[in-house]
Length: 196
Image 1 (spheres, rainbow, N blue to C red):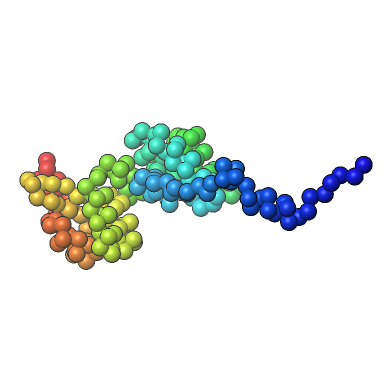
Image 2: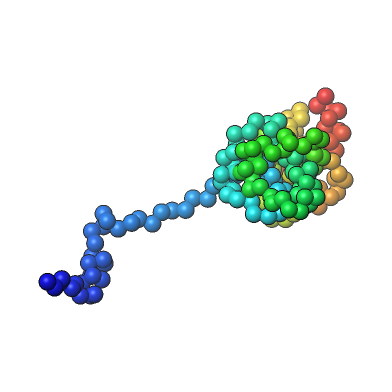
């Protein structure tokens, strides 16, 4: 018994003339927003395959403030361990966070020049740096000053940028934004005396 063959042109017509309900809709790709502290952590992680960024971020958000700081500080001894034990491969970031890998080190790592948790908490500083980016400041300068070297706050109703280096360096990086938003530049020592 012969089976009827459907001509190719009818198959093509059938596919192109499908009912709209059976056609798949194109899905819009939505880019996930990551916190500033997670971005610093992700970029500081030892080289190698990092795994899935969104999964790692989900685990990061489950950590409390001291754990985030400990995870960040643990990267230094972890990277040293990977260098010393050449046969050991680097864990994916989500596994490092989920397994709390930093807890296996006897001595804490040195701080990576940043209290990463402050980046999430210090909204005034974050807002200031966003404005600097809009004014065309370099990403290098923004990254440098976001690493705990800058505090933006209000003291006696005045907008203050407290910096831990020479004020000239800071003014050179962000002078345009400082003037536009009406900030005064102080040293961190001045800021600490006034707010003590």
